[in-house]
Each structure stands twice: as C-alpha cells, then as structure tokens.
Length: 438
Image 1 (cartoon, rainbow, N blue to C red):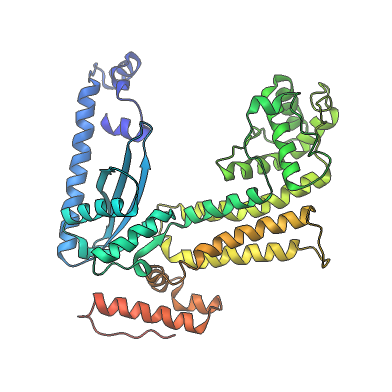
Image 2 (cartoon, rainbow, N blue to C red):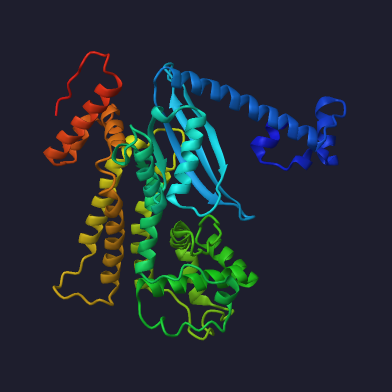
C-alpha cells in the first residue's frame, strides 16, 4: 500500500476513500482498512530503513579511504522557509551505485556563501567525511563560487578548480533565454489579453522580424485556445489536411523551452493554421485592431528561431539524464554546442559588409551570438576542471583521443593528462605506476 502511494505521489487520504477500499475488497475478497496515520508510519519506516542502509554503506565506503561526490542545492519553500539539501553519491567496489540524502538543513539568516559553507562543514563533520570529498556539483549561482572558496580554506584537499562541477543543464538554461531576450521576445502575456480584440499590436505588425513573428503567433494561438468556434474549425482543418490532432501550445516567459514547443507545434499544424487564417469565417483574425496573419517570411523566421532553440532542447534532455553518466560528455558537449552555434551564425550572417541592424537575419545572428557568448562565459570556468578531465579520459568511448579528434591545443591535452596523473598518484599511490600516451 505504501509503495503504491509513494510511486503514484498520491495523497495519504486515498486509503480512507470508499472507492479505494471497495477496490481493495474486490481484489482481496475481503475489506482492508488502513488509516492515513498508519500509512504515514509505514512510509516513514520504509524511508528510514533505506536511509539507514545507505548510511551504513556510506560509512563503510569512507572507512576504506574511498571518495564521495556531493550535489548541493538551496531553495525557499512556499511558506518562506529556506533549506539546503546535500546528497552523497558513490560507487562501491562491486560497481553498485549509491546516493543518499545526508543533509536537509534549515538556513538561518542571509543566504551568504559563509553561512551556507558553515552548514556544509557541519554536515560533513557529522559524518567525519571532510577528507573524503572528491567533487561537488552545484548550479551556477554566484553564491556557490563563494562556497567553494570558503571550503578551500576549511578543507585541505578541497579545490575549486579540481572539485567544482557546474551543472550543464543549468548553464544551458542560462544561455537559451538569451536567444529570446536578444530578439526582444515577450514570452508571456495573459491569455485573455492576447485573445482580446482590443489588444493593440499595431506598432509591431508592420515589420517582419523574429519578435513580431513570435508575437503574432502567440496572439493567434491564444485566440484559438479561447474560442470554441476557432478550436473546432482548427480541428476540422487538421482532419482535412490529414494531420494528427495536437493541441496548440501557448508559451510562458519563465520557460524558454515552451517557446520552442509553441513554434514546433505551430510548424506541424501549419497547413491547418494557414487555412484557418485564410478562411477566417468568424473574422476574429481580420477584424482585430491589427489583422493577424502569418506570411511566408513569418513562417521562415519561426523555423530559424526554432533551429537555434532546438540545439539547447536536445542538449538539456541529454544533460538531465539520470540513468546514464553525463560528466564525461560535458566538455565535448560544450564544444559541440559552440561549433553548432558558430556554424549557424556563419550560415545566417549577411553577405553585405554593412548589414541592416533591424533585419531579420541580423537579429537571428545576434541572438545566436549572444547564446554563444553566454556558453563561453561558463566554458572558460569548466574546461580546466580536473574532475571533468578525469571522467572524459576514463570513458572508454572517449579517452585522450577525443581531445585530439576535437583538435584541442597540444598544451591543453598535456596539462589534462598531467592533472589525471597527479590525481591518480595521490589517490592510488600504492598501485603500480602507469603512463598515459598523449
């Protein structure tokens, strides 16, 4: 019973509902009654049992002199209580992977680096694992840089260059919105306002640029979603064009990938949407203060914006994986994204020496270039990280040869191999020495 509630994220009161008890009686041939308080105790016992087993494995792992990796995150709950979570990750000699929460601490006072590093030190001392930390993964908040600087002073083997792993998915989530910001895209307006015929957008619809194309698409989607007549008309057009019915998506400002999904869904529904806009029996598009339509240039612009955002969507899906290792692929993925953006910029770049700064092509190039610069901002903080270099070299799919295939500088490859050997010698000094061919 407890497992069902946990895995389905159901309310504890589920077990007290008549429908659930009827189902249990039907399955078991007799009624089964359990209260939500009993269910709570059962779930707590499962949680504590797993936690104690993991902590026992953790202590045994530390006692052998092996290393532990950490992930940290801080946030404020809905009722304004700030917390910091610390999770330990390790692999035992039988190649079994473990992870367990070792700290869920209430933060007091300001969220400064000193305050948060003190919390981390307290948790590490509680488990006597100051000297067992290998790498710490965190997002790119400025305060986390300060935490690592404080840890360097408190822990002898802790080094920001060697131990700080920047979460790639968070880097991507910082770079991708710069595309829309550069295009001056208004990513969210209230759906009722967008659908209103009083919505005045006359100052933008006269020119075709990415921001205008996105704005018109949002208004069209909002009108379709708010009108039963347009909704049914679009469904009929989808059937007429022999497409699968998919609901039009309206994006929101705080989720850049929702803008990508809105564009991709509209591109799929394009034949049906074009017919809807052309026929316009209800005149909801033509009688608007500024008539709404999507020209061929609008559709072309939307495809070009989608092409940029798709790079970050694919990379985010990869970096967010939890069933496969991603650390060894972060360095090559950075370069893949930078190369892809560079190629896209070169393909879009205007041929004339003095490009028009208000042209669609110029804005597309500027958006891609700003995303490239944001990636590079974190790339220079990442490419020398010892943990990522070691992970890449140890990955049998990559090894040192990957850096050569990517045509990295010989000095960088040599320095990376030296970092690998220093870490190997320090942690496995009793083993026979090896050499890495560069």
